[in-house]
Amino acid sequence: MRNLIAIVAGAALSLAASTALAEAPGPVFSQDKLEWKAGPPELPRGAEVAMLFGDPAGGGPYILRVRAPKGYKIGPHKHNGMETMTVLSGVVRYGQGAKLDPTAEKTLAAGGFAATPAEAGHWVNFEDDTVIQVTGVGPWNITYLDPRDDPRAAQR
Image (cartoon, rainbow, N blue to C red; front, side, top):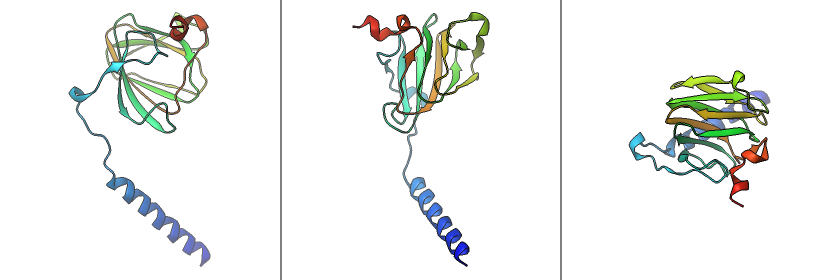
């Protein structure tokens, strides 16, 4: 009987929590309403970022888009948390590893997807004017595997 009471209580709590979450409206907007801003100092200049959901600096899920021109490059780096990337338009070359290795790159066009585990080295080269969508759980950070690739060093 105790187990039955615990199960019923757990189900009631789950239902209450899901109902409360369902009542709080989430962000809904069309692509033409995105607010593009200059990318953060952790990324090379030239990219723009639009936040869709959450805050990468905070602790919790986030979704953002990065828009970058043909020829834009993010050198080998890693993050403290897992990251996913979906190519929405354009073409990127994506590689995993500690050092840039063109033979290890995969070409990803619109619809292409990559999941990068926490602390795994990876890089992205933009072959065309491209928009990618990035998801993860904050707080977000980036550590360049070669300090010379870190754009923050040039800003000091």
